[in-house]
Image (cartoon, rainbow, N blue to C red; front, side, top):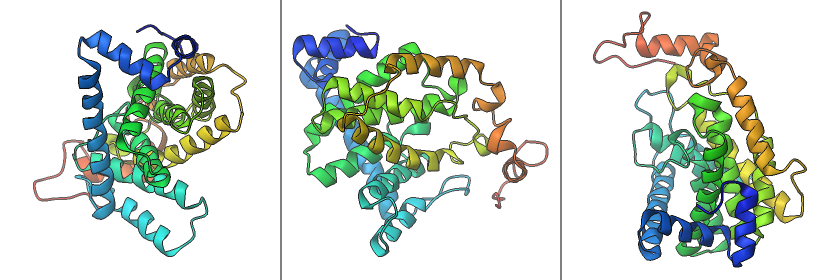
Length: 304
């Protein structure tokens, strides 16, 4: 890739007179040796999977294999139809769609890791709800995925995208930054504005721990995806309005690396701290796996 930092990404876009998505498409094709047309089609296929996951979780209340979660996307959708959401219909729709994809993931359904399975709902939630709102065609959103990919590439190579390495800030935080930056560009913002959106989003996620109850990507992961989609919308609006990240976004990524490295192991996906070790979290763990951690007998199901 021609860029290793977000500033280099902006500089390359300015030099070539292209968007982040266009630059990433070209660079990806060069790196893989696959034509730009084929590379674009691969990403289009990924977007189709995202839309299908949104649809599935919204149209039917899917339940996770553990029985701990499921149906919240449908609940949000029903609430939106019968009430005026406090956050507005657009934000609530993005939230519901993000919940939908995350719930599909918890059922072992097909999703796209963006950048991980634990954060898989944020980009689809933002993209699909925005597509419906602004009447964009699929090709426009596919280019947005390349924009998100460029941002994720920089984050992954300069910090973390894994909760086991850097906490949930590395998964949900990175996804929020990717979604915010890409949406800024999709709405006509400059690469520089998009990068400010990334910094604004990441600053709001610093220090977020990874504390999955029962070691499953369900609690609190699913609701964090919903909140993350709303945060991405807000960060994009701030950047488009001219709000800047006073701390350069590349430096924010560096802070995420620093904070994640210093984070205790019990707060990095081990389920040994945080919400996982609350009285309720420990009870759920015992219901899932039994007092000795060997799992329930055949035919038993966890009760919460």
